Image 1 (cartoon, rainbow, N blue to C red):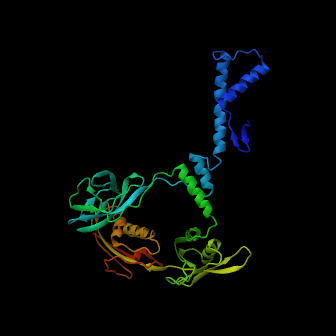
Image 2: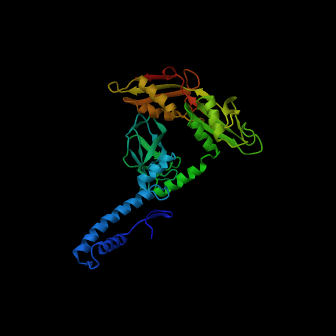
Image 3: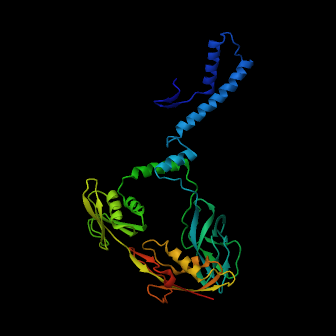
Length: 389
């Protein structure tokens, strides 16, 4: 039998094979009459040496196996996957929005407040930050599972407040959680790596969006496609539309051209385009859409603790940073604006939140954003007005 690196893989010597080789070498080179009985000193020494040699063969086999993504494990598999830009998915907690109903006044809900399912106390979700109710009414509070993994809960089942809070009258989840996960296993990582590699060079809408998102300066990308024989939502038959905020026109065009299907047209609803160059040096005009940036104006009034309040500027910056996370087509939900405000040190209450698309807003309703638009704060120092007391 061949050992080491061979055409069929790696041939590992077993302890028995190593011991037999040692004994035969001793018989050949020392004396054919050597005593290799079980209780002999020589045999006991051979067992010790053979066992250590077998460990080295095991290490060699492990090294060989860990250069193959189909057999590598643990850190070695992570390193191989990283070569192709794939990283192991970490553990994550399920998240859910829970409606908290308050009777009146300012109620402070501490971070770590637990809500569970009646009859299933192991299904527990907790608040991530301190939440302070603006007053009587129902407010959406973001919560995460107390444990990692795909913790699920039926709609309306998160109703048990483990530690009662005066003024907090009821809790309930209007939607199911976004499921978390356990750390990706080696088997799962192998499959996902293989699937992603099979998509390289593919021309799916997700692949195009991914390539455009990697262009320097791009902050947000959305995409739509029409695979019918009729114009749908301003997209011609068998065409696609990429909506992109940020980035150079020609860089975006090149990213789209390099990934898009042959013979399928890109389109635009904003008359934007760039020039891409193919492998033969020919120039091509590639259409894409720039989102309409909807400037949002915010007026917010806060009650503060003067000794610990970080200042009006900190509130403005918190709201500005919150808007940086907005995706194309995402609506402005006023109740969510309270979350970053309450994260500012010294803020005790948010008494008024008004928003609109023009200065000095008075609206208290959510602002609906069209699918090709993006809500932004143009100049947070002037467009966000903070009144503190």
